[in-house]
Amino acid sequence: MSDALSEFTPRSRPERQQLTTPDGVRLDSVLIRAEARATRDTAVVLANGFTGTWRSPDTKMIASRMLPVGDVMTFDFRGHYASTGASTVGNHEVDDLQAVIEHLRGLGYAAIATVGFSMGAAVVVRHAGLFGGVSAVVAVSGPSQWFYRGTTRMRLLHFGVERPLGRWFLRVARQVRVTDQEWDPMPQDPVELAPRVAPAPLLVVHGDRDSYFPLVHAHRIHDAARHPKELWIEPGMGHAERSLTPRRAERIAEWLTANQAAVHPSETG
Image (tube, rainbow, N blue to C red; front, side, top):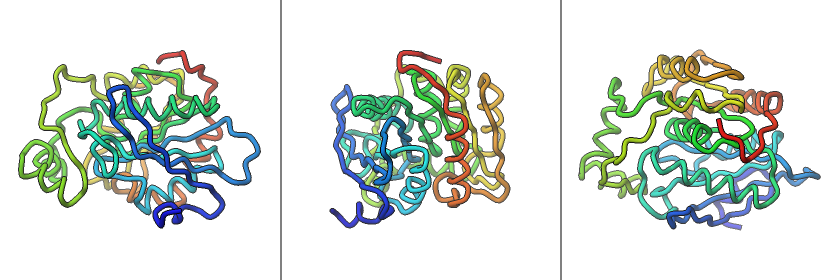
């Protein structure tokens, strides 16, 4: 077992797997199975933020806290680290998530919840609205709209993905390859698809010290969504995976255990 895999909780069996999307992108993925679990019908998928990876200590901590809910699969989006292709920063990433979910269904998991962070939060909301069939959705620190430039960090991010120099820096310094193609057609943004997440329950989590997206983004997604839905505004919390403490991750796991719905894979929002 590689050093990266050995850093997961000792009470689990991480299995590195390579998945392929319908458009031929190969995704570097890890399935973490809890050793003590007798049945394997429930899974949680973690969708990282932009530049995030399953290798990060934050993602590994969150994965370990999700194991009481079910086995956990985390992966690197297209263009990130060992996954092939180029990042589209939230557009075609819904196809990456669907490939992961279809793989888990093929393994026999009937209930599959998705938990996304920042860009991954936008992806899990959009995926549930477009594909349906998930048992619950958790969106942490997510944007409600495309092209938001209202904070310094988001202006820097746009420089990184829109300018050749920024894309070069991301490729060299962060191992992230970003497409130089504009979106055509323009995909629906998260707030447009939030009403279609139901019948799966939706939990929106946002910190009041988020330096990327102010609280209005969380309120817009929550307000647009249909019931069942819930909104947590977390005092003192910053942005995405790095700000999710072990206790916050455990609370999300507890919410998933209590709120997962019986949604047939063929259903849409």
